[in-house]
Amino acid sequence: MMRWGRVGALGLGALSVGCHDAGLEELEQRLLAWRADAVAPAVKEVSAAPTLAPESYRFVDSSGPFSTGESEGEGGGMEAGGPSGSTARPPLEQVALEALTLVGTLSASGAAWALVRTPEGTVHRLGVGSRLGRHRGRIVAISGAAVHLVERRPDGNGGWIERDVTLELDD
Image (cartoon, rainbow, N blue to C red; front, side, top):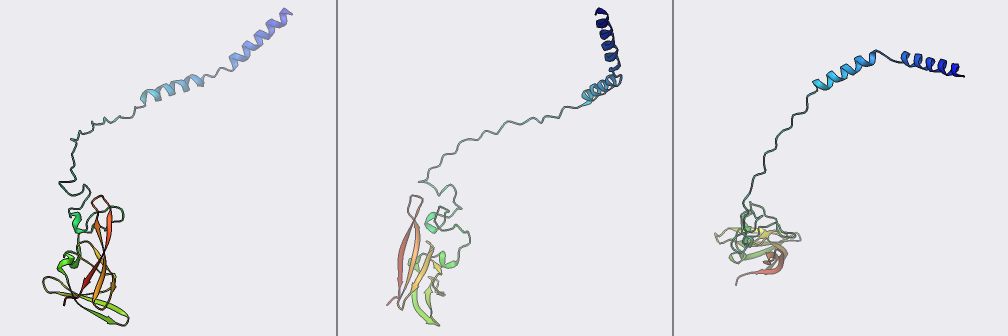
């Protein structure tokens, strides 16, 4: 029995020597050369973040931090539900409503028109939906002797108040 054990061990040894491949050593040498030639990616150094001085904001002394430079009393501002803060406003939106004078009303083909005079003496013909006054008043109705508007004014708390205004004919 011992004899068969020796024969088996010799057979296994011969088989394991036959499995050895000389090409593996060459492959390992190539891999080592590639790893040595591989360049690590360049790491870019990040500069430190700039230090900014804190700014204080006193809402009593100035306009809103996000305003376009117009005062809120002139209809500027972008708060929710408020008028849009367009920079180029039509001429009639640059004049206070109290300075405008209703000089007459017209009615033609079912459409009503109001004739409004500016302090400079220019007369404008306006229809329902037209805007006038610094608080973006919108004409909602025109009757025989009056123009009814809705203005949106800031309420001082970041919101807006709608106010009904009537512009009447002067006697």
